[in-house]
Length: 115
Image (cartoon, rainbow, N blue to C red; front, side, top):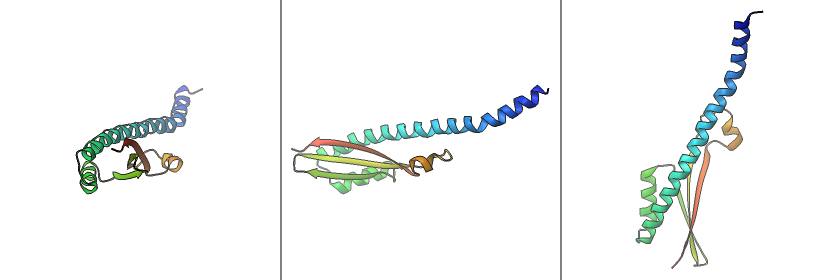
Protein backbone atom coordinates (compact mmCIF):
# COMPACT_ATOMS: atom_id res chain seq x y z
CA UNK A 1 0.00 0.00 0.00
CA UNK A 2 1.32 3.45 -0.95
CA UNK A 3 1.22 5.70 2.17
CA UNK A 4 2.35 8.81 0.27
CA UNK A 5 -0.56 8.55 -2.15
CA UNK A 6 -3.02 8.05 0.68
CA UNK A 7 -1.72 11.13 2.51
CA UNK A 8 -1.97 13.19 -0.67
CA UNK A 9 -5.60 12.16 -1.23
CA UNK A 10 -6.49 12.97 2.39
CA UNK A 11 -4.78 16.34 2.08
CA UNK A 12 -6.69 17.15 -1.12
CA UNK A 13 -9.99 16.22 0.52
CA UNK A 14 -9.34 18.32 3.65
CA UNK A 15 -7.74 21.38 1.97
CA UNK A 16 -10.97 23.06 0.68
CA UNK A 17 -12.61 22.74 4.10
CA UNK A 18 -9.59 24.28 5.83
CA UNK A 19 -9.49 27.14 3.29
CA UNK A 20 -13.21 27.88 3.79
CA UNK A 21 -12.78 27.90 7.57
CA UNK A 22 -9.77 30.19 7.32
CA UNK A 23 -11.47 32.74 5.05
CA UNK A 24 -14.70 32.48 7.07
CA UNK A 25 -12.79 33.40 10.23
CA UNK A 26 -11.27 36.37 8.41
CA UNK A 27 -14.72 37.55 7.24
CA UNK A 28 -16.24 37.27 10.71
CA UNK A 29 -13.25 39.14 12.10
CA UNK A 30 -13.89 41.90 9.55
CA UNK A 31 -17.52 42.10 10.67
CA UNK A 32 -16.52 42.44 14.32
CA UNK A 33 -13.88 45.05 13.44
CA UNK A 34 -16.36 47.06 11.34
CA UNK A 35 -18.94 46.93 14.15
CA UNK A 36 -16.34 48.27 16.58
CA UNK A 37 -15.43 51.07 14.16
CA UNK A 38 -19.11 51.99 13.77
CA UNK A 39 -19.55 52.08 17.56
CA UNK A 40 -16.69 54.59 17.77
CA UNK A 41 -18.15 56.62 14.91
CA UNK A 42 -21.53 56.64 16.62
CA UNK A 43 -19.98 58.18 19.72
CA UNK A 44 -18.30 60.81 17.52
CA UNK A 45 -21.58 61.54 15.72
CA UNK A 46 -23.41 61.99 19.02
CA UNK A 47 -20.67 64.37 20.20
CA UNK A 48 -21.01 66.36 16.97
CA UNK A 49 -24.79 66.47 17.34
CA UNK A 50 -24.56 67.65 20.95
CA UNK A 51 -22.13 70.39 19.85
CA UNK A 52 -24.75 71.78 17.45
CA UNK A 53 -23.54 70.44 14.10
CA UNK A 54 -26.13 70.07 11.34
CA UNK A 55 -27.23 66.80 9.78
CA UNK A 56 -25.30 67.60 6.57
CA UNK A 57 -22.08 68.35 8.48
CA UNK A 58 -22.39 65.08 10.41
CA UNK A 59 -23.14 63.15 7.22
CA UNK A 60 -20.10 64.68 5.50
CA UNK A 61 -17.96 63.63 8.48
CA UNK A 62 -19.20 60.04 8.07
CA UNK A 63 -18.57 60.02 4.33
CA UNK A 64 -14.98 61.19 4.93
CA UNK A 65 -14.33 58.19 7.17
CA UNK A 66 -15.85 55.64 4.77
CA UNK A 67 -18.03 56.26 1.73
CA UNK A 68 -20.15 53.18 2.55
CA UNK A 69 -21.36 54.69 5.85
CA UNK A 70 -24.95 55.88 5.99
CA UNK A 71 -26.63 57.80 8.80
CA UNK A 72 -30.27 57.77 9.81
CA UNK A 73 -31.58 59.96 12.63
CA UNK A 74 -35.06 59.50 14.09
CA UNK A 75 -36.79 61.75 16.62
CA UNK A 76 -39.36 59.69 18.50
CA UNK A 77 -42.12 61.58 20.35
CA UNK A 78 -39.66 64.35 21.27
CA UNK A 79 -38.39 62.09 24.08
CA UNK A 80 -35.28 60.60 22.51
CA UNK A 81 -33.23 60.57 19.32
CA UNK A 82 -32.20 57.35 17.61
CA UNK A 83 -28.95 57.29 15.62
CA UNK A 84 -28.50 54.43 13.13
CA UNK A 85 -25.20 54.05 11.27
CA UNK A 86 -24.88 51.37 8.61
CA UNK A 87 -22.02 50.10 6.49
CA UNK A 88 -21.60 47.28 3.99
CA UNK A 89 -18.93 44.58 3.79
CA UNK A 90 -18.24 42.33 0.82
CA UNK A 91 -17.27 38.79 1.77
CA UNK A 92 -14.15 37.08 0.47
CA UNK A 93 -15.31 33.58 1.45
CA UNK A 94 -17.00 31.74 -1.41
CA UNK A 95 -20.59 30.85 -0.52
CA UNK A 96 -20.80 32.91 2.67
CA UNK A 97 -22.36 35.79 0.74
CA UNK A 98 -25.19 33.52 -0.38
CA UNK A 99 -25.92 32.54 3.21
CA UNK A 100 -25.68 35.98 4.88
CA UNK A 101 -26.21 38.21 1.85
CA UNK A 102 -23.50 39.96 -0.09
CA UNK A 103 -22.80 42.77 0.67
CA UNK A 104 -23.49 42.23 4.36
CA UNK A 105 -24.90 45.24 6.19
CA UNK A 106 -23.41 46.05 9.60
CA UNK A 107 -25.68 48.24 11.75
CA UNK A 108 -25.12 50.15 14.96
CA UNK A 109 -27.98 51.83 16.81
CA UNK A 110 -27.69 54.28 19.69
CA UNK A 111 -30.55 56.02 21.50
CA UNK A 112 -29.94 59.35 23.23
CA UNK A 113 -32.29 61.26 25.53
CA UNK A 114 -33.65 64.39 23.87
CA UNK A 115 -33.34 67.56 25.92
